[in-house]
Amino acid sequence: MSASRRSGATDELGPEGSEPEREGPAGSDLLAALLDGMDAALCAFDADGVVTHWNREAERILGWTAEEAVGRAGFAGWAVRSADAEEVEARLMSAMDAPGRQVNEFALLTKDGRRVLVRTQSAAVRGPDREPAGVYCAFSEVHAQIDLERSIALSEALLEDAGWGVVLVDADLRPAVVNAYAARALGAGRTSVLGRPLGELLSQGVEELESALTHVLAEGAPPAPAELWVTVRTPEGERRRCWRSGFVRLSSPLAEEPVPLGVGWLFQDVTEARQGEQEASLLRFRTQQLHRAARAAAECENPAEAVTVHLDFALAGFADHAVIDRVAEGGAETDRVRLVRIAETPSGTPGPCRLDGRAGLPVLYADGHPALQCVERAGTVRAGAGSLKGDAAREWAPARQWPQGTVHALCTVLRSRGRTLGAVTFLRTSHRTAFERADAMYAEDVAAHIATALDLAALLPEEG
Image (tube, rainbow, N blue to C red; front, side, top):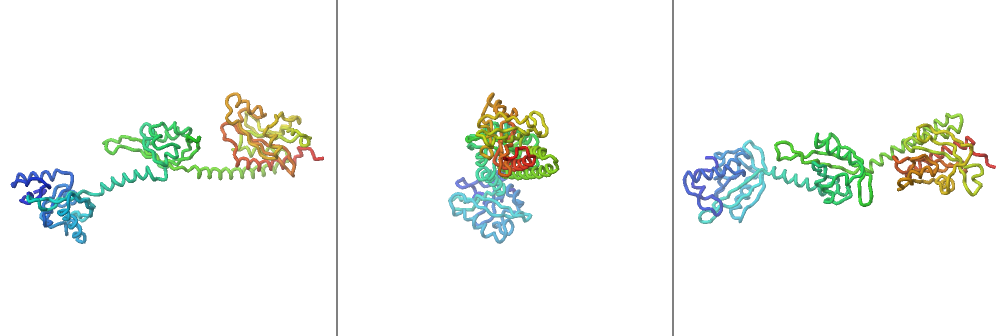
């Protein structure tokens, strides 16, 4: 006997609505074979709660054999804790008086004393007179179902409510699934980014991202998150962002050999934090440069050399070129301001700033030149080539007496003891960004030191 007692009880406990089973070994053995061949754990009780059937899956889950289970009155004392037995029996046997199937969850005991959470489906068994003759019960371990439900819940939470971006990238490096956070970060809708090359979404940083995804597909996840700087194309324009990214390789759980399905890419936007760190680091560096310049200038015997020392220290990491123009003699009293070049950095070749009097001849600045505006306004003026293309872009810098290739300029006035002495102009080429407000503040600090050195050098004529 494997799944049930060889008795007439099997005739009374057939499936609801079925014909009574024929008595005899053949019918009983057939029922036992059918029960043992099912993937679900099955057991049955008669009207008094006595176990009448017990298949091999039930034996696998709980460890009790059919010989040990069949004939016992309920689960009390062996398959259920004594404290829970009454409640479990009541819930199981209540199916006799209820229509259809009932679903319950409770803990059973294995033969070695472990507790196993199971989910049961139970229904009444009708006798020949259509009256309830017992209950049959199918049960399975819940942890597999719970694991599946948790996996689904986790997936839905990641794709809907997560505070970081989740993108499933297929083997062709194209987004297959995108959550709401990632869609906002990419500046597009969740469905509009699906299947598109990453190069259509990012204008810069796409090579580094694709390289990381390719590495994960081939070698697996990296040991630590990586920070990637990218430029995102959006309807409002391009945005520079820093994404702290982690990657996991996805493989099919149904294949015997690992089959890559793509890469799970999780990222969080840390742009503001990184920009804050960069700004703080830049501020510390510039402050140190000012202190170094002041100490080096103090060792100069000639105050004119101190001017070039301050300029050399200021250029480090700040600009590519710089020029210093002083107000020409009589320039402050005339309607038109005239400026004379007194120092500049070499163009085309690296080297320190050098003094360059140019015989006192005024620089041929056209009306409206940024350096002239700076002196006239006694303030800071920014200029740039902007969106100029072709010949217009190439002629922009030479037309303003600046080295070829200059695209950004920052002119800061030189003032000392209430007098306007001239202007210092910092220049950047195309590989640098435009000057910003923080750059203007730093330039003003540098200009204050240069103006003091100019005053000490008596490079300007005495008043009166």
